[in-house]
Image 1: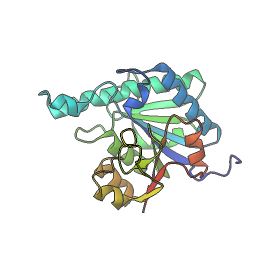
Image 2: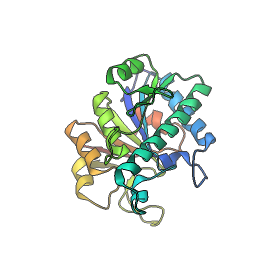
Image 3: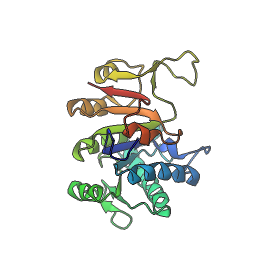
Image 4: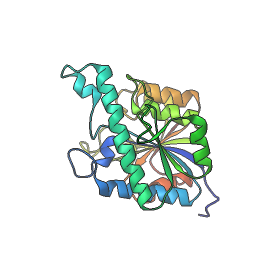
Length: 241
């Protein structure tokens, strides 16, 4: 398919922190970072503008810490710092293959990355630099899924691509149930009203619904999956109005 035939020209790619684990139980696998960087490079070479939001669950989970007596606010801020670590690792992997990028943080940490400023991020995108937005929304009690939806709205992204371990959204866990049924298409209300469908939290889904931004759930580890989705191929599960 020619480079000009794109369904989505500006995307937000949402990755969980666990996506960076690889075969590890904790931390960041450099080989996984390199793989993700190469997949993003294919997008850049096809003139697709890319925003990335990473979770931090491979390093720290605020909700889990709360169960052991840590204050939720403290746990959430530590989780935000974990997303900065992940973002810097991905940025480094992109630098290795000569893909220009900028890490912007919702928390002020000018020694390691830029502050998140919408107009500056837009300018980077227009120059075909990958923008990696770290530290979630900068506020406790909001997940990185919600932060991804907020940034997608702010930065005029045409779609949220949620890259996961599975090939879409299923009616039950496909790792535990061989007869799990994959959905090709769902509405926002299908996801909001069904507790069994675990894609993103309800705040994130509602934000995308209110701003008419589709969410496409696809498998990260299939090469060219993200590029093909941007080109309009039927991949994964689409959630829209």
